[in-house]
Image: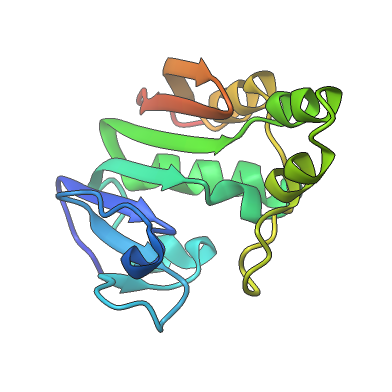
Length: 167
């Protein structure tokens, strides 16, 4: 079990050899045991069985939450909230469905479909839900987070802070 305080975890960190970013100072988590250099191999749904409650200062999830069914998102966000220390930060980056619709409007249908449903290179590379800025903000606030920053672009980047509520 990973024990804090002050842990920084990059969820679904992926394979650096495939071009994924290596976030400096972060422990790397992924479900794929074939990836070299991971600090934690587990399903994100089991993160709370592998990381001590209130032990993380930052949890980063870049292009990973869209790979879970819509119904699981509230529980995942609440679990992440509980793993963070007071005033800890959840950095989340997800595809922006509004941008996908713009692609379709500009007759870039194939590109929109690829971004909307994932690259489908392996069993984990399928998108099962989608986010707009409003949806992401609502889900984060329902989990107890305070939105520090929310930037809508081709992807949505949000920094959400644990505020100490016990929702």
